[in-house]
Image (cartoon, rainbow, N blue to C red):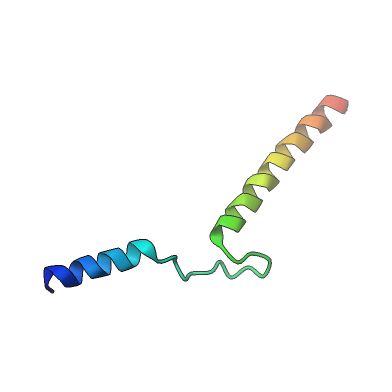
Length: 55
């Protein structure tokens, strides 16, 4: 493979978004899945903190 072909492939990969969807009906991107999981974790920690404080 020549050097221009290598650089063309490298630039194509770095500029294009991945086409891999998470396969979850409510989320179109993996970033959305990650944000949901982080928010759910924070909500559980807050819920457990409140539960231990008021019991």
